[in-house]
Length: 434
Image (cartoon, rainbow, N blue to C red):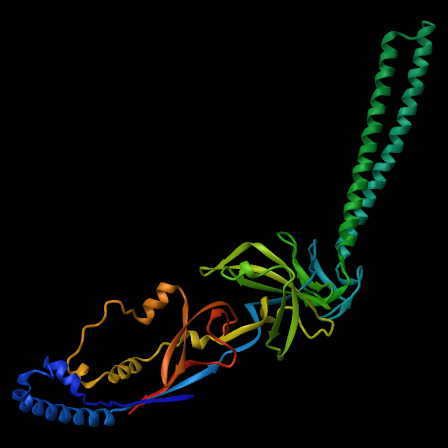
């Protein structure tokens, strides 16, 4: 913190008076003007004393907060929020309707592929299987009858042809025998088709019966169980979800939404640190594996889903946890750094008012026009397209133009400018008073 103090101090200069009055010191009329000069001097001294007293009673004390220029590493991050999700999550449901007879697993149970999760009541399904099996047996018997009929009609046809050769059978009798044989062959084909149809129906009923026993499709852990013994499952319109399984929680994913203004800096392979509310003092490491090209718009805000892979060997993290991630998009080593507050600092108007009092008394009594070439700080900043920082030199604020680069929101890298590590920059006006 630096304190500067300014007071109104004036001096009376005879040359200033002569110049102000336009009197030549060597002029003969000088003697005639002595009286007027004495009067003017008295007036000036009186006015100076009055203004000096006024300035002393209204002196300003301005205190500044400062910060040093330093060298260090600058890490630029992009912040995004999201939720933790399993790498592979499977919803297990029932393809058939029925009543739950038995539930074999519960929340957090580890299961293996093929393990029984639940069983539906199979009484009705078993009856349908038995019925289909009986129909199959009937059609198989009909096939045997049809085969016997074919053999019989074939023999009659052969005998009719032999008799026709000896002239003992008319041509009409031969045609009748041939037609009977053809009908027997067709009936055999029909009954064989019925057997195939009955077999297919039996297979379908057996498959439905097998679906009454629901197995785990993966090795994993039970996240959700939405079924109880005795519950009726209706699968007429859509498959009801009975269990939600996660394949492997030792590897987990973080799905975050990156703002459209930041997505250009986010790349696959970048590292990130994130925190969760359950462990506020712990930071977890993640790595970006995907950055989706498709956008999501929620309440006018456009974001892009980004997926990060997380090692969860300790099983501290759980699916559904909300996380805040800081993605490292840039790292600059040994950068010349200044605080962002120094870039935001604007000198108070009081310092400008105080600096004007350093002019001579005569200049204050007879103001001079402002030079047309002078520019304000804002105009210089705009013309040069540079940012300004301020330092204190001999109690006065001095602006230094700088060119900046990346920032982490707290510190900013300086690329060009008359700054060195250890220099003190003004960042804030602490107080201003009588």
